Figure 1: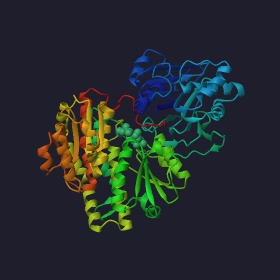
Figure 2: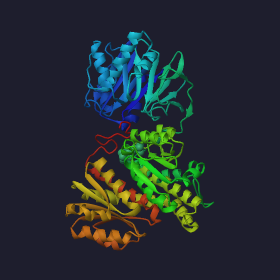
Figure 3: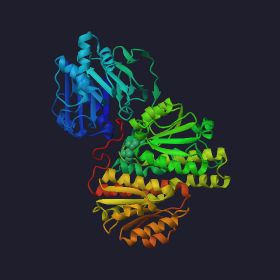
Figure 4: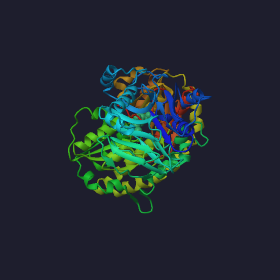
Length: 614
Ligand code: M6R
């Protein structure tokens, strides 16, 4: 979590940094701060709240200077107040530092520094690091880059940092371990940021800093990269594929709504070059190139967090259905610490929109260290998880900025379905007829989503009825059971209404006790498949206890329509593709309820988009 941005060059740094912080605000928004270096002054301005609060705070102050660093915080150590906000000064106020990550041995380091006469203003782990850098710099009489390198050798934990120093006014020193950092290369100027969004409007030449690397962005001596063990590296310059229009709301009131409405296009992009309707074929290069690994796998383990975990659960259903390869789905945070059984015949799939989730990255590293073949499904190109895996495929939905994941989820499910079909065909575990029928249906998914989105007004009206609710239950079965979990997660994270998702038949084993006329129950009940009739019975059980049924049903459905209090329809499709469609009305329902309740939809409280701490 936390977003960091830096600039050195000929522009006014303040403008570049504030704009950059706004792009990174999805990563944390507890406090914001900026450090600017000009005319032998190192000015630090910081405040509790959002970037707009920082702008107000900086008004009328000296914001000149062509180099600086800035930070938007998601609090870990120390409450979100002005003192704990970044940047942090060193004792002499000659060095300033911003940090994304956690210094685990900070109290031990602090004790040592206290003995050398250092004092501390904040409760943060970060302040310890900047003081340590100053101590090392003075003690060893070295330049800033060397001081950072030596200090980082003392540090246990995760970091992406940027440091500036009055004694080295032509250089920003940056380093990373466990948290992302990208450097942009312009003409006689450098940018750095937690992701590419603050950089894209100035240059498309970037370097993804690797683990334990330190970069000196030096206006006089150029860009230099070395490891924290002091080994020189040759940086690899990559081209950014992002465009600036992908980062704007394009007339929508919130990024979340824009991203929901983008799904017909994002899924077209996701399937482009993969689902080939004229050749009756689905192909995913990352799978085909390594098909033996999959076909010989004893099992597939999927590891992910949050919404990506829900996509993984749908992946289990489709991959087992069409390939007969056993699939286990793990929470990365549990998997990484419970000494799981992994062997060389396993394929481990990690799923992550950001590609930076700390627990999923650690799960990936663990699986790799045990010799498993590691496959990634990520959205962010060049992200840490994408670079850790042996192979993978991108979801290609463009930047997802709303904290609540929407378009990334439907694309993850689409990718997993394509993988299941590719492997099923290779293995001969899916009939030609079924393969062709699903292939054809997949190509129609974007137009079917367009028709669901036309019900936006209806769902907005429906949402007004339920803003009273303190609790919601979501029920689904089969492929749509994970959709129930995902619908509940969407609602709770952006509207702060407590919601639980269950496999519909599990309700009678406990949750049914919660049903009363106050309780809205969202039932995902598309027609087709063996579970439809069972869900109908589950709806009867809720009705008998006066629960309020909101049903997501197929357009031709008559049975559930007659039983439900409210109905949202979706076009018919193949059973395994329903999750892509049924999740869309649930995204809209959560969105409208949150908007009506006056919640901050794109930046819900206590959350951040990329969870880069464990
Ligand atoms: O970037 P990732 O897909 O690895 O993120 C995983 C979760 O943090 C994420 O899906 C989270 O649950 C979302 N806020 C849900 O909308």
